[in-house]
Image (cartoon, rainbow, N blue to C red; front, top):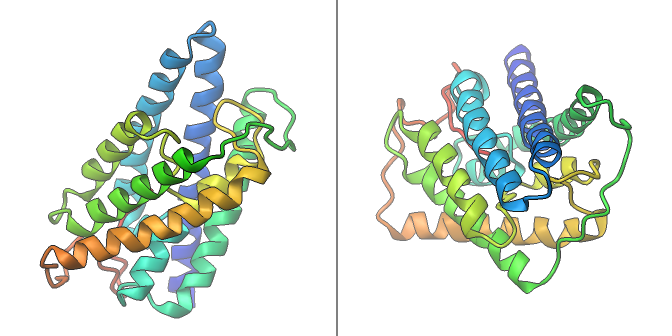
Length: 235
């Protein structure tokens, strides 16, 4: 029980800080970019790449650094996360995401409790989220030992630009960003479509991995959690 509590704290903390990075850098970028949306997106993407890499490295040895219910679901399906831990992991990630949004608002003297009005909908957006999440899971599952943090962060940075949705690729991120009417926000009415597309993408990523002659997980592979808390990583 103590070990699970430690992992849940790491998941909540990591997801909260990830949302602080995404939302906070979005607010700062929008304020400084002078209306240049491309420049604001570039700043937001670079901050996310750096923050994500550091969070995976720092918290991966504790909980696997999922920060993402879709990733946790795939790891539970593969037997690399105890299935009994899936719901607690998901709740920790969702709670952390909301706390991260509120903390970002507090730092920028914004109203703490708010809801996004930024609509993100349509077939292109949903396809983009499925593609982004499928690619994320494929990178996580295929990454050589010790390379997952940099590969995951780099992939997300690229996906900010090659997907129409700017690559949320994370149901917890969608949930947290509903509570921020900022550059990085998503309207609550748009969230279900994003989340559904992300879980479909996660299943596709898993299927692609299995089709590519999946390697048998080893004790030192970055996708394995043992009782000692080996990392798995995710966004």
